[in-house]
Every structure is written in structure tokens, then in C-alpha cells.
Image (tube, rainbow, N blue to C red; front, side, top):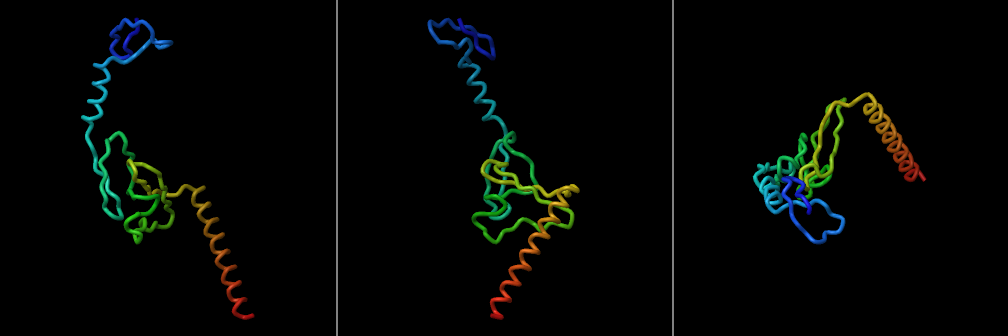
Amino acid sequence: MIACIKCGKRKKVQRLGRRTHWICSTCSKGNSKKKSREELITVSCDGCLREQKIRKSKLELCDGYTCAFGRCNKNPGFKIPELPEGYVCQLILNVAGGFCGYKIKIASPEEAQSVARAIAIRDAGIAVLRQNRDQKFIN
């Protein structure tokens, strides 16, 4: 005898190997109905306005959604809004089905220091490139 995990209904079987539990057809049908009854939410890409319907349980709330990671596939001119000083943008992969999401939040002290270091490295690299370019034109 084996018993249904959900309702406890017993079934007489000859051989199931090591399995001692199973899910009866009544319980498995109930699971599929529960998913189909769950309301669908429409999420749209901020760049091209393409829409996708997903279940509420599969959605993670973000400030905005895009087709690709931090950009839009169909509208290459789309960019995530400019950030004010002291804010950072967190990109999250596959937040709403195939869409990626972004959250704009206030930077913690560690994040602010990291951004300052990255800007310093970028500015130093640009200065070196300009210096090399100027030397090539002189020679």
C-alpha cells in the first residue's frame, strides 16, 4: 500500500520500487487549477513597450523593466534614466519572465566609495589615451 502525500488516499500496488508516496489524480488536478486561476499581470518594456503576461507569483517588483539586460533590443536609443548624485542602479536578470529589471536606490557608503574609485580609474584612463593621441600627432 502507498498513500497520497496530500490527501492520504491509499492505493494498493504490487511493485513501485522504493517509492512509498505518490500524488493521486484528484490532488494533481487541483494543483493545475490553482495555477490557472492565479491572476496574470501585464509587464511592459520601458523602451519598446512590448508586453508580457506573467503570474503574480513570478513577478519581482522593480522601478522598470527592459527586454535585455539594461537596454532594449528593439529600441537601441533607449537608456535607463540618468541617476541623481548619490544614487545607484541595480540591474536584475530575469525578474519578470524574460524581462530584466532595474531598481534605483540611494547608494550605501561602500557603494559610493566604489563608484568614486571607478570614476577615478575611468578619468585616469581617458587622460592616458588623450596623452598618447597627442604624442602621435606631434611625431
